Length: 438
Ligand code: GLC
Image 1 (cartoon, rainbow, N blue to C red):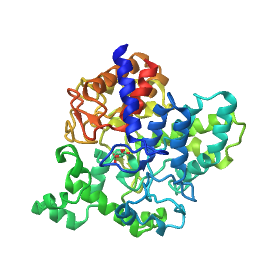
Image 2: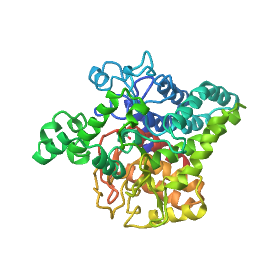
Image 3: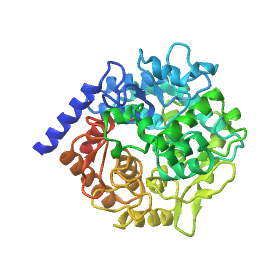
Image 4: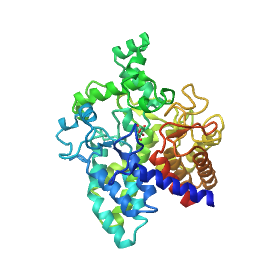
């Protein structure tokens, strides 16, 4: 009991250290801005001890919302001229007028954060809170279901690995190598010049290179960002002549859950959700099933243009549990992968890549390590699909890993060795949340 209290107090102090007043940075050093899904997870922790601070976190995110409804993955801290120039998002007329943001998005955790904050308020306060954010949320979901689903097939597409939140995860890196790797990066790779480029990276300035993505992968991500910038972050222009767009499994599972939550919120405040949006939401639920592969009993991401499934398993494999709309039978098949020690069930699950995959690297960023945010989502999904014991076991191993290793960015799934950034905000915030439920 005392140990848990201690962990709780330490977690709060991590969030206080990273608190910038009206938003929280993910970690000092490599992450100096406000990130979209980070702040949603952060607010989910903050609501337990300061609900009004949690509301502020979300309202600050909303200052970055674009005129077309997009929520950018980063709202920049003032004074970062270099990042401002890297992005140049003002070239798109939809960018907000007074706030600097990037021109891409991240998984739509916003509705979940809004709802979880609402749970901590009295009914009249909750209604006021929901009314404050409702039209922004509707606009955001309309953007997700239209701009990012141009053929109206039901699945939202992503244009950059950073949008997935799982930057160098195998489905994205394999597609990138097939469709988007410029010749000059291949040459750098061949000539072994990546050490030179490494000198200019922000993350490896703060963290050991062995725990980050390779320099060649990082370069490819930056070169993809430059392509989006040249096209002024205009989805139609970007899709022209490019095969690099993915209907990402993790993202669409979060979207399906977020849609359902948005409907709950609307009901609480007796508001209508526009008819078109309602129809699009239903389509997404149905479209998820087109990502199922009966041969390996799992879902995959899909290439937007070719419609080919990208058969690279990753932690996203388990995310349809969080989406909450799959059959009992399929949920059971997914849980089998989690139970298997050679796949997603080592000592400290859930690895971002199955242990038996050729991609697996114990501390390789999104190619192996266990992340607390993914565990939190999977725990929630397990509970809602009736796997209470599995949820409990995963909660316990996650808390043990954090108690042993500290509030780090990610951990070895084999022995819990901590890695990446120190004092990482979502690790702290979600620890607070997981402790409550214990
Ligand atoms: C990295 C992660 C991303 C996260 C960001 C800030 O880019 O891949 O998911 O949001 O860092 O923590």
